[in-house]
Length: 126
Image (cartoon, helix red, strand yellow):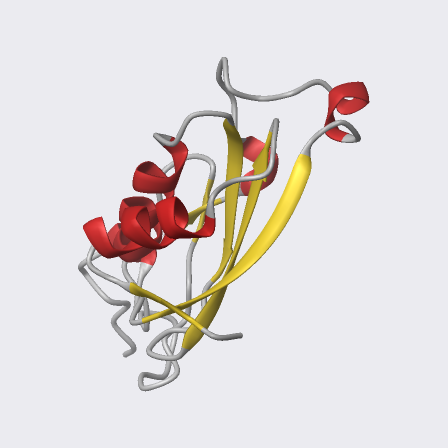
């Protein structure tokens, strides 16, 4: 008789569950480390599709992020900068992740670096 894992993990609505490379099997990730699905994002900060072309996009290499919680901290700090419309993160757990920031005007690199450092991570030469 096979018994399924009695501890079920629930992934929050609008989030993508990550499988961790160090683990294996269906239970290799947890709901607290789920990264929000960008297609499910809603809120006042979203730009209409026609407005996206007017936004400035910049990519930053950020070291030290390992999970969805890290992504949320960096996204919150960068999102608090004036003019920032959206923040997208391509997480490379334990490596160098690409953080894309879209804003209404070019951002000062020093302000971006300070926001990332406030979250506990570091912008590196990418």
